[in-house]
Every structure is written in C-alpha cells, then in structure tokens.
Amino acid sequence: MDKKIIDLGKKSGKMLFFGGVYSNLQALFSLIEIAKEKGIPPENCICTGDIIGYCGQPQKTLDRFKSWGAHSILGNVEIQLRDEEEDCGCDFTTGSRCDGFSEIWFAFAKANLNTHSRDFFKSLPDHILLEYAGKKIGIVHGSCDQVSQFVFKSTDWKEKQASLDALNAEVIIAGHCGLPFVDQQKEQLWLNPGVIGMPANDGQTSTWAMITDDANGFEYEHIAVSYDYLTAIEEMKKHGLPQEYAKTLETGIWDNMEILPEEEKLLKGKKLLVEW
Image 1 (cartoon, rainbow, N blue to C red):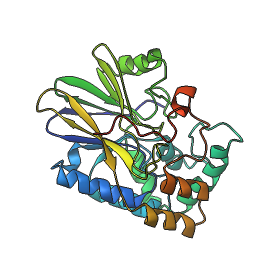
Image 2: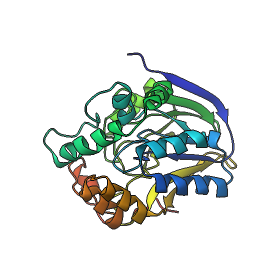
Image 3: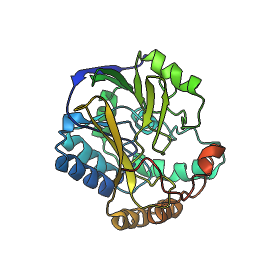
Image 4: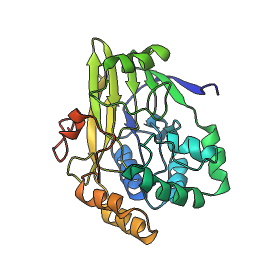
C-alpha cells in the first residue's frame, strides 16, 4: 500500500510534539492544558501515533483527541485497528511478556472503540511533512519504511539516515520506542519527543513531550508531563488490563526491557537528561 503523506506547508510559532497517548485520558488532559498555558494552538500540535494503547479509556481518549483538533499520523496500533487485525503490530518478540500483555490490551481496545473510530484512522496519514524555522521536517512513527521499527538513540545513524533521505528532510520527529532522545549528525536531527501515556523507564510518574520554538531559529525542549496517574491506574484495574503496566504508571519503571538495546537498558531508573 502506498504511503499517505500530508504536507502542512510552512508552520510558525511554538509547536508541541508528542507520541503514545496509549488510551491514557488523564495524560491527554494534562497535555492539552500545557498547550493552552503555552499558547500553542491545536493546529500546531502533532502526535507521532499510537493514540490508542495500554490504558483503560480508548474511546474517551480518542473522542477528546478528535475534539481537541491536533494532528496525528498513524501508529502501528491505529493501522491494526483500521484494518481489523488481531494484534497490535508492535513488533514484539513472539511469546515475550510484551507480546502476551498486548493480546489483552489490544483486544480490549478493539472491543471498546465504536465503529466510527475506524473511519478516523482511515483519515490519518502515514507521515506528515512541514517546513519550520527554515528546516524541512518529517514525522514518522517508527521509521519511514517500517511503522513498528524500534529506533533508539543508540540505533545506527545509517538507519536514521534512510528515513531522512526518503522524506527529503533535515529533521525527523519520531515515536514508537517510548523513550525521548536527541541524535544529531552534522546539520541533521532525529528527535523523539517521548510518549505521554507511559513513563520512560526513568523512575518518574511524569511522562514526556517536546515543545519547539522558531523565535531564534529551530529550538526544541523536552518537557515532563505530570498527570493524574492514580485515576489512570484505577481505570486499568477496573477493566482487567495488565497490572504490570498499571504498576509502571506508579513506579515509572517498565515491567521488562525486552525491546531495549543494551545502552538504553543502562538508563533504567535514571533521571533523563533531556528535561528542561
């Protein structure tokens, strides 16, 4: 299937980038408040995909996202729901803990989204392009060619270069891996704003997003997103979702590190240096 790409043209002013809402309605509420406080309009807010995921309020989260009016690309979860598949398409190793847990939360999300949700997912692009602060920016979920590819800071630059080249971009803003980071080679940047629906294995209950500003060139800052994680946990418990993930909301530590390269495993429980 050909990739659907939307070009937003030139953008200006502050922008908000984030990924992985993961059906975490409380985190989305907090993010929307941050956007309002910073004076960032919905049309300058962009999600890197996976609006739906691990947590307990998929339909309410999607409804609030749609009413907000922010942009989003397709995450692997939206693609699988759109196509009525039986798994999340996260590319977890078969038989792993994440694979087993995903069977539960994906089935729950699929059963608790209304029929109009598929129409919304069908409207989303695979990638977004824009020009900002004189730079060409491409938005991807995993990578340009593989929506579920896990790209980390430690990932070889050649794999990042492939997406930059494919989209003719100077900056890629990506999602999927769950960890915020910055990687740079000469004038090219790979930025992951992080996800708002789950902590970044850093021992904090807050999650991550990124704000950019073009007032003095291309500036970017990762921000911590604090939210009512106790209510999010209760929603997960109420619906019988994996309690290992509910515990992650409380401790800030992932249940396992199956997807992580060795370099990222060493960051477990450490305060991330991308904070303000």
